[in-house]
Length: 601
Image (cartoon, rainbow, N blue to C red; front, top):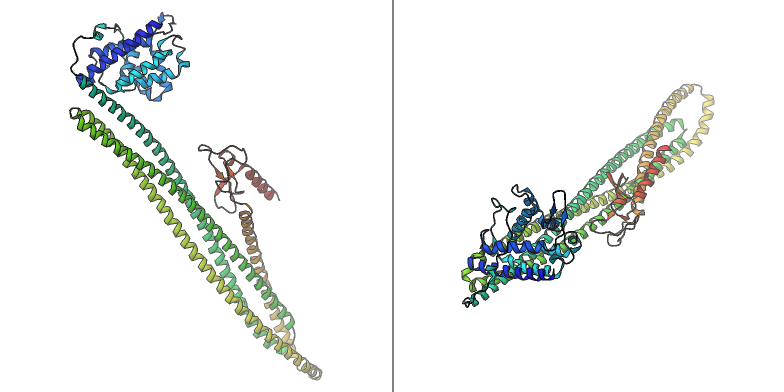
């Protein structure tokens, strides 16, 4: 077994050497009729058959090398195209023919050495097909893989249709490898050719590295696009919240205007009533104390309504500050995205520098080897493809930057709108203060009038004592008293109507108080729970698993803590959010219990 291994390794060296020499003399493009190429496949077949285990079946013994080659499809997904194309060929009926076709296709792809290296690295899988002393299981297999790397220089044009690969006889022709005694005149030319081949291999490896870096950059840009889409969704959610808050503010303003109009109407009605009552009370001289108590109750109710309006304005200012904090968080996210974009630009500049170095080396190769212009043009086409891909990457980056700028402009517009709203609210507060001062002045004037009326009442009491004596004497005044009684009944009806209006106002005020209590509960819910930062949390609070690219962070909109997707996949409608939002499992159960208890009560 050792002698066979050494002999096969020497034959592989000779076949590869003869194949390269003949290919360089013919221009490095080979056909299937080329004799050294056919001998190379024969030697390769003998190397793969060395030490194969015999598998027995009902038909007979099977000793084919296509079995281990099928493992390449599992270990290297790039080889799946070769395996499927070999299986779909209708002309191949035996495993040997399929193995030969697989070698042809791998050589045309210039990845024969890579596929065999993957097989040798996984010797625990090859032990099912080869004996322990086989060539593929020993160090000679790695040597052969190193020799096969040199075949990546060749361009093989092989046609599998029409060839009978099943019935070919693999016999090694040793006459091709006998050395000639004649001196070789082209030694220097061979040295130059080897230098060119080395340069070409170096350029191909650099192109592979560039393709890998381009793939990594594409994945990073896809990630950035996903994050930008998420930011846009968050901005849309923020705009929806702002719209809902604006609607609530408009409703509150409408309610405030209605309350003001009603209060003004009441004040006007009270003024008219006081004038009528002064004229009537001069005649009747009774009931003034009751009317004054009603007026005082109305004034106290109006003061309470004004205090409630001031509280509502304070709550709106608190909501505005919370919105400003949310906008600042969005700005921080945008700055982080800008930093990632700058890093990607630096990587692209490095790749451009590498491409420029490659271009200079290719120019030097052209000056030294003008006869090999055709090969160099092929490499230039590859570099052009890489440059086109890089341009596409730059265009994607420009699109992402445009989207980021649009997001920044939207944030600026939102800030301006918030500033305008705050100024309007301040103006409304100033107007309310002015109205309060005017109401206080009116109260002072009414107090003075009341004192004057009390003085007049005292005077009238003195005169009433005199009038009582006169009433005892005069019986004709009874008719006037009856008329006064009828007027009093009418005034009582008016008072009853005013009491009904006051009851209706009390109902409206109770409804407004309930709304204010709901708003206070929402603010308490917002202020009670702190919103954790992304940098502070490294593990899920519930399952305590570490966050990663696959296990992402999610905030609970109720408690503010950070959980993974599995622990916060529930959604509920909260009082602070109009739409259903993400909630952790514990908050979900608590909120459901509260809802069930409230419905039961």
